[in-house]
Image (cartoon, rainbow, N blue to C red; front, side):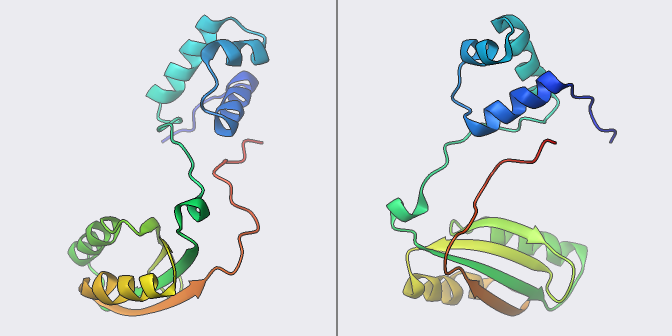
Length: 156
């Protein structure tokens, strides 16, 4: 798929929306020194082209008593298309799993899990992750402190 041509105004608009997606079209137009109509049309085009996928509210997990973040590396016992699809369907259905990556190296997948505490993670491992077929081994990496957490994609 060829990359889409984005001009400097598109990139500025995307950065503004990454920083604060609740800005109105009128506010964005003022910042970009444009009128509302071309800004609205640009946003709609970026949405249509799939560059803007959706708008979300980012929550503070610590204020929701979800203080333990764990990266869990998973190695599958067998590798074929159907087994992989089944694993992906099951792992993405777990509410504690916030991110899933298919990775190269010693492990096949890396997942990010957010729970309240260590006993909750133990319950997750035993009663949820442990019920998924074809997991050969796992390795848990516990986050001691978050240094940087950004959802912004570098646009330079």
